[in-house]
Length: 200
Image (tube, rainbow, N blue to C red; front, side, top):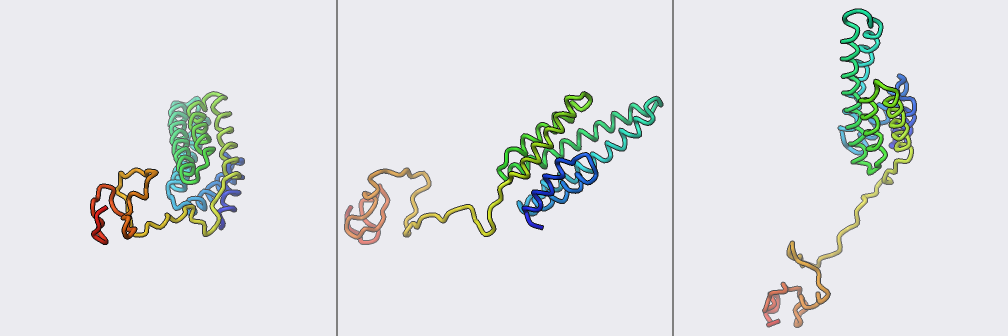
């Protein structure tokens, strides 16, 4: 699967997140991106988040069914804790993707989803989570990846056998660091050329 396909799957899954198909699409897409960036935090964090999300959802539903029984409220509370853990791991996966890809929308989405999960007992939290997933989807669709074979770095200029000291500063009169007799690079504090032996 190509990285472009992974981006599209994760983007569509983010829009549909909360549904089973959305979760599956995000998992498949993030796995591809995790392999592309060679960073297991991206996919592993999402898998952990998904497991906690499902556990929290089951506990919350069972708690709601038995709401008026003694066990109902504790189940809802434990379910809420699992949902917070899920949001935290999902946020960390988005942070890792943001760090590796340079796309800051993932970082913003992670913050909104995390804050939304904390405030999910009120309507504002649900809205923040929804906005976070929309921003994540935009991040996936606009994510720029390096073309295949690109290194992203240019080769350093040739040194011609001379390596300046680590703390040396570039000066405008760089020609004074060459022997006037043979042209060999010399240290600025040298009084004799190490190559030809002439006084500088």
